Image 1 (cartoon, rainbow, N blue to C red):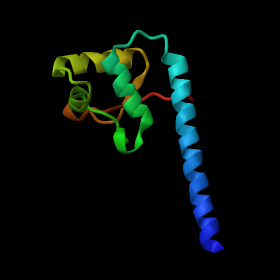
Image 2: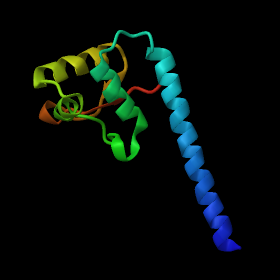
Image 3: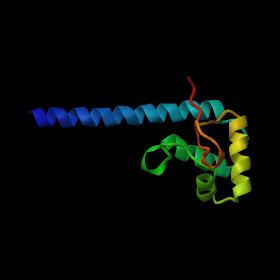
Image 4: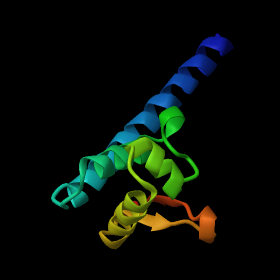
Length: 107
């Protein structure tokens, strides 16, 4: 009986986390859905919003953006600056070559 309740509790917690991520992603796209974004920017934003195994839990760097979006380093930097200006992402503490960005969530 204890095993069953522990399993049920773990399953409910996973479901709650999935629902929370889905709602956060929906709120983000409600706010930024009308922003003019490139296909590459949308792809990277969705990866950041999804988190988990295919996401970037510690944010994304310009070089990671470059690899995911299949763009040049200069284009990756421009895209990130544009997303920062539009309020889609925010810089994480640190800087220089280690600058990382994360989704700017609505509070």
